[in-house]
Length: 125
Ligand SMILES: CC(C)(COP(=O)(O)OP(=O)(O)OC[C@H]1O[C@@H](n2cnc3c(N)ncnc32)[C@H](O)[C@@H]1OP(=O)(O)O)[C@@H](O)C(=O)NCCC(=O)NCCS
Image (cartoon, rainbow, N blue to C red; front, side, top):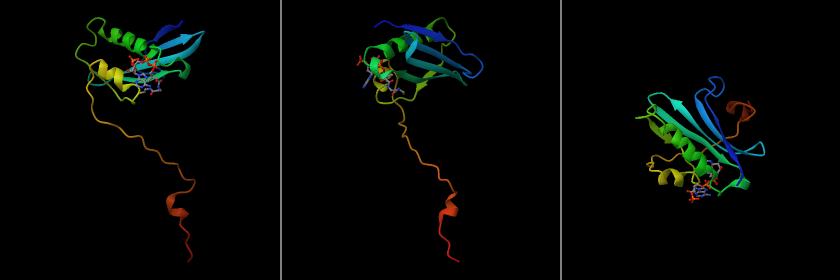
């Protein structure tokens, strides 16, 4: 696999407090992960993604290890709590790395209606 990894520090503008690591090949992004700095010395790991055609080749694992090395460099993040919300595909690696499983989260959705609910009832009088 011929690809490189780019580190993008927080910009302070639209990305706010997010650090990003982007795997790219031929100038196209083929995977990324992020981390967000939060209040009370908390760090959220988020937004892991690898392009369909490049999955199961260790790109996520490599991005993950680079981010892990980053937060262990020096003393800056000592004592911080790192957490993530995982899907079934990303959970095994975090468990392997010693994270402890907490609550599950269930996705829900609802289509918005064009008219407010009250106006949908037929009124005959
Ligand atoms: C999850 C995802 C980032 C994994 O990327 P990847 O580059 O294919 O992962 P890797 O090859 O580096 O695998 C690393 C580890 O992740 C886990 N893993 C990856 N794909 C998995 C799958 N389909 N099922 C179960 N575990 C999986 C395994 O523990 C794997 O280690 P192993 O290869 O020693 O078994 C990728 O499948 C993806 O983008 N999925 C859609 C988006 C998503 O679900 N993101 C997570 C948001 S929380």
